[in-house]
Length: 99
Image (cartoon, rainbow, N blue to C red; front, side):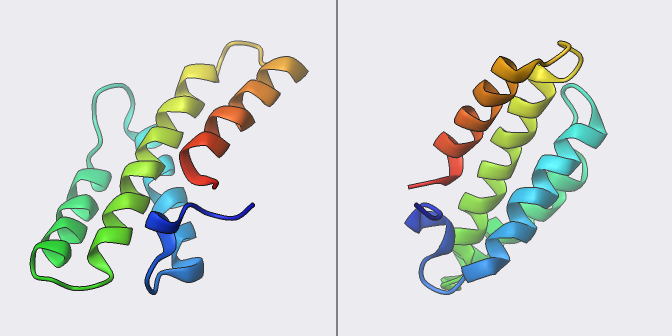
């Protein structure tokens, strides 16, 4: 069904992947409770939004969605995820980014 509008409108398009995948990866790489690089990049996105840059709000939304996805993935890693769990993970991820 595609990405949620707040992640791509008005001009993000495929750039949403950079934010979602980048922040999800940063969450996984930092370990529990530490966002490191994700915090830094989110701050830049928030500054852009505060300055009125039209790309700011969807970048913030994509960054926050990426963090949620990273947390979803972290929750399921190491659980010996079987077929049912993979479907659960995909359903959770879709709820964050898909229409």
